[in-house]
Length: 116
Image (cartoon, rainbow, N blue to C red; front, side):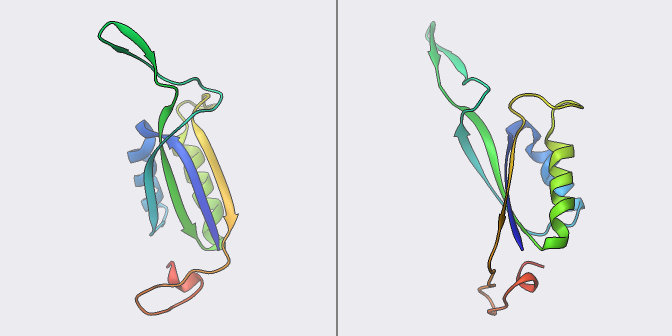
């Protein structure tokens, strides 16, 4: 089992969410997050003064999948989270981690059956 964390543009969230559902992903958590990277932070104007907010709003997705769903999940994220055919700076990152165990609280089921 793997845990996939992806940080994507907020403008791509609905498209990515729908594509993951169509790919068979049955469980996902998501959060509004803020951060920075190569792409610089946002600048806003407040009462005529320019204010550097210093962060960029993004969405963080956490997806737990069986090993056989890992590559389709990554492929879906790569396809639908990009903003151009070759991508742009700030499109996001995907992190993949090994997951030792998953336990369904309702009935104590463990392992891959607990996420399917």
